[in-house]
Image 1 (tube, rainbow, N blue to C red):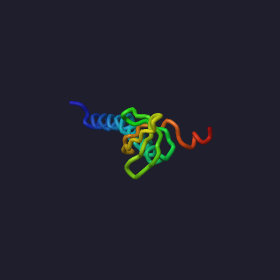
Image 2: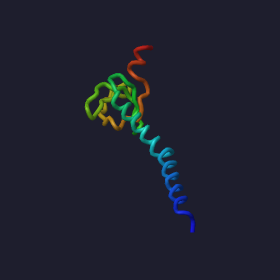
Image 3: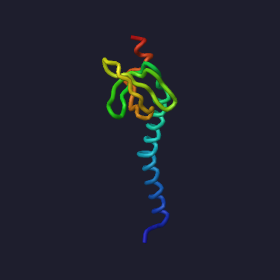
Image 4: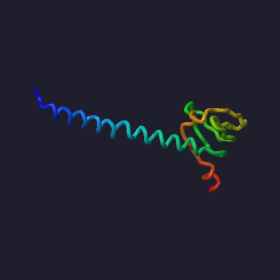
Length: 95
């Protein structure tokens, strides 16, 4: 049969490759998403995971209130439902 030490080295190498290609990038994305959710502020234009686009009008601990459309419809969503920030409030002020 084969060398048991060689098999052990191959398993360790596969685990390292698995870690660096899958686990580490996923944890980095999770940290970036959490930082984005923590930095939400009034005036940010956001898109939810459901595709709703609007501007944040109030921020609470677990939820945010989004104003959408010309008729100023307000929708309360969980912070975790925000998929991305399209325009930061600070960028709008600079324009």
